[in-house]
Structures are given as structure tokens and as C-alpha cells.
Length: 197
Image 1 (tube, rainbow, N blue to C red):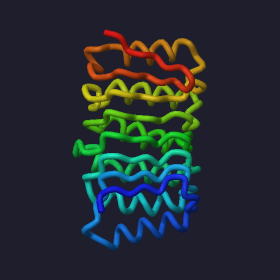
Image 2: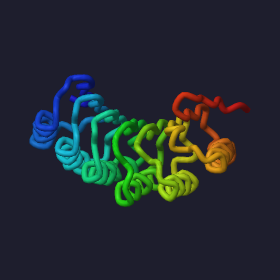
Image 3: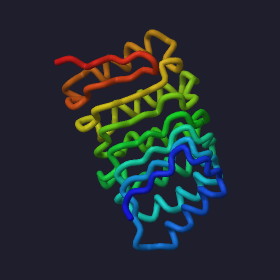
Image 4: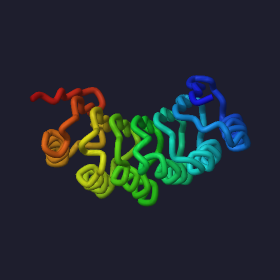
């Protein structure tokens, strides 16, 4: 088994942990694609899944949005994805609608963005990134990301970009075709900016 989809299953943290433990126990099962969004994973489940993710580096696709994952789970999750992100295998990440809103979790997310080598789809929308220093950290991480040549789709919460100056900086950065030659879509919550040649 390389693909598992349990989105909208109402699993809860305990069932999420059970799934993670089963994956860990079966050393021959290394998922390339996991969809586990809107399943109430929460911190407990995120910590268990993080233990699984950090055990290998061939995960390619992860959808884990809207799971009420908070600081401890968010840090563990971001750090556990580093092997797959740095190996160039992790290309699609939807980690939106969780809680990356304190220094350590924002730092872990920024490290992931900065060192991932082959992201083509990144969604961090509605991640409660609303403090200006944290938004600056994220903007810096995007500018230094090793995935700049491959990133095609990027989504971030427009409500977190209320300052016009930051929005302009973000769009100027992402609109630079020398830095982001593959980018075709920037989604800022309700607003979609199509990149044009």
C-alpha cells in the first residue's frame, strides 16, 4: 500500500494514532500519498503521524488540513517532514487550517519551506499566522526556499496579509519569474492572482 485516503472520516486523535502505529509496525508500508484532512487528527494524532513520517524520506503528497493541530503537534509535524522535503520527494503539501501561530511552530514551518527542494504545491492558508514578525519570517523563508524553481501553486491567508506593504512584497517576490519560473497561481484566500507571462 502506497496511498491512503481517510479524509472526512471523523477519526479523532486516538484513531489517527492507531493508523500511525499500524504504519510504523509494518516496516514495508511507506506511503507516498496520504490524505487525512478534516479528520480531527489534533495534536495527539499529529505527534503519532510525525513519528511515522520521520522514519522515511519518500512521502510525496500530504493533505492534512483542518485538523485542529496546535503548537506541539505543528512543530512535530513540520520537523518530521524534513527528510521527505529535503530528499526532493515531497512535492504537494496542504497543511492549512491548523495552528502555526507561535514562535517555535512558525520557525519549524519556515525551516521546512526554506529547505524543501521540490515543492510544487504549498497551501498554508488559514494557519493563524497573523503576527507581523511571523509573517516576515515566512516571507523570508519563501525568498530563501530551495523550491523556488519548482513551486507552481501557493496559497496563504489573505486576512493574515492586511498590511498593504507586506502584500506588495509577497506578490513582488512571487511574481519574479527569475526566482519562481514555474509559479502559475498565487491564492490569497478569496483572491486568486494568475501569474502572466
